[in-house]
Image (cartoon, rainbow, N blue to C red; front, top):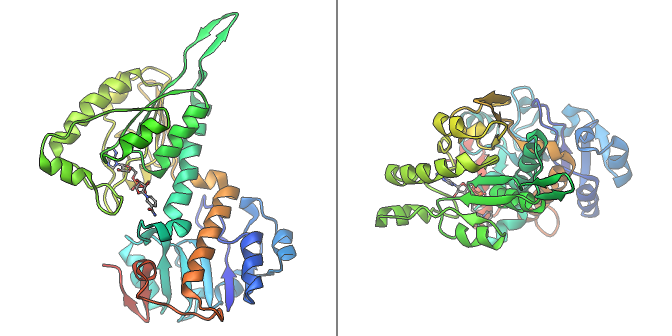
Length: 371
Ligand code: NAD
């Protein structure tokens, strides 16, 4: 098969869908690989590294004119027409963007969006949400530490003692767990909150304190279990109790990292104007949910703003700031997915009995499958 790797053209997207490592593996299976010139440059992969791995470099049009196209982000209006009908496109295509999926279907593409993979053990090696959220959680803490004008660890010096920073993590999925681990390595004292009950044990095993918001009704308990590993919106009464507890913790916190998401919906509001007002001057909030509307009422997408003396970082897509490793992990996710849709002779074999293949297929033969 001919496999194309175009450069990403969306502003701020630094990642690339294949690395010399994954290209070597594709070539070993007798595929041809065409990489757009300069595609890896923002991920610290020069064209020469791709060439040494055996890839052919070409134009965007040549990369898109392939049997299989590997992308990071959904194709733009300019990119989509460069693909022929029948092309298999794999990437993070946003399963909730119905308009784009309809356009891809009209173009005759067979498109797979890996964010839609089910959260089952077999899908872990191709789970792009996890690979990228892990990196983003790390970067959120590093960015916060950079903006924060004090030490993270406790320090005892001849000139006196410096207290450890207090970090509050809201939402402990993949990104939140990595944020806890990273803040811990930097010596902070950490508290965390989430709606899902299994998170308490994970938080405590990383040496952080879990903020227990008790469930008062069976309905709350049932909703908190989530579905397929994901959270569902909690009832208003629970959210109020959580807000009251979080408000108290926010007053003490030096850094708050918010990561709370509910798939396909606006992110829940967890940090209100009043909470920001009550925080210490110089404290830092990183709102990782800013693209989904934000967990903090005062965060602004793409900006770092200072409100009531608190620095609020609303930079989206933090994995793009660790582009080399984000690309390396993402490219491996794609390679694992390819193994699911290619047979032993390396021909396409799209098996819809496979729940991962079925869940990630957005469109084919002009039909949209995403409900
Ligand atoms: P996510 O990015 O969808 O959400 C981030 C976190 O926000 C979640 O933990 C969620 O419970 C939390 N949240 C939502 N509303 C909240 C609120 N009001 N207050 C506080 N927190 C709130 O989640 P994710 O990182 O994609 O992971 C979700 C779960 O799926 C994790 O337990 C993860 O370990 C699991 N997972 C399983 C697999 C697998 O088995 N293949 C793969 C990846 C993740």
